Amino acid sequence: MTDAAEPTTSQEPIVVINSVSKVFRNDEGEQKAALDNVSLTIKRGGIYGIIGLSGAGKSTLIRLINGIESATSGTVTVDGLEIGDLSGRELRELRTQIGMIFQQFNLMPSRNVFDNVLFPLKGMKATKEEKTQRVEHLLNLVGLSEKRDAYPSELSGGQQQRVAIARALAREPKILLCDEATSALDPTTTKSILHLLQEVNQTLGITIVIVTHQMSVVKEICGEVAVLDTGKLVEQGTVYQVFADPQAELTKSFINTTSNIGKLSELVDGPNPLVPLNGSQRLVSIKYVKKGIFEPLVSTISREFNIDVNILLSDVAVVDQNPIGGVIGVWSGTDDDIQRAIEYLKDRQIKVEVLK
Image (cartoon, rainbow, N blue to C red; front, side):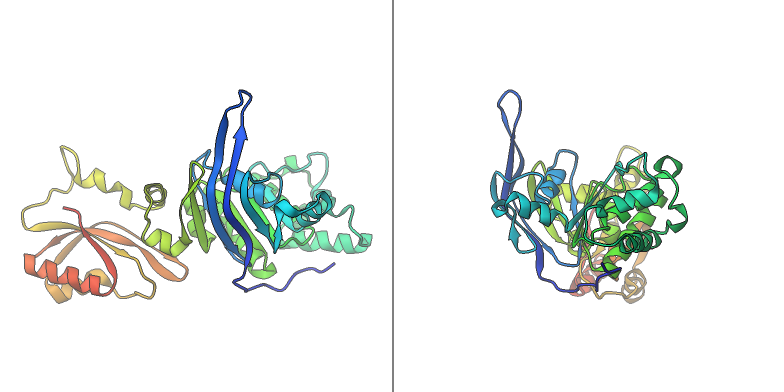
């Protein structure tokens, strides 16, 4: 057994979902499509997010990846193996290469931390000393070496999830599936768990698939994302692309949960707007939609085009080492100056929209 794998940087696919549909039949014989003609590719060594509301088909999708469910139509290929073609023994062998963590941790309450992490190694051909070293290495990785003799009931939620992560890594999987793994945690603990998953990805080279209904989770650590809506894939791409220029209405609503921009209507709409506009003013939104732009946009247009900008809302973050988000403000100036400033920004591939 080895303590760690070399990080894998290959962009080849490790999971390919091709035209997959999954239909369930209820007790009355009625059919319901949990997934409808979904196709996506997950690259080896990356962190991939799958987001959607409850009932969107997210959990069904990852159950297809680990072979717990079988597709009604279409194909699921994992590490070059088509799930539907595998025998029972081959499928069990593949599952040893797929770790999984859940919202409720699923630890064994009667076993201490060490034995919970040791449990997946019980049937492996390794010496007791090798298994012990493996568990100790994993507990150190997740920051719980001092808790090895504690029981789950004695741990916080974040600590329990760290144990669950260590247990999922025990057999050195190639893929780690995370099904709403941070939904039961407070924001601070969520951030620490996400940083741990990022460390696991970077140091061990494990492909991570995160299923969530929280866009903030996707924004924090994912490189690519797929958006599901009632079983259909409505949007996919790099996280930067999707955040910068979302196409689906559901995606836009998810992004608004991570941004102050959604509060705009409270300021300018309604019978008593907090920010009324006079005839010479414009309410303008500017957004980053391309990487590599770092200049101070507001100060530049104010200086170059003699425009006063009253910033109402701003939400600029860094995703994939580039700024993303935007600024909404009231622009005051002549029509010609405002139009020249808009063209200047558009030439630099900044998305500009005159809202009012």
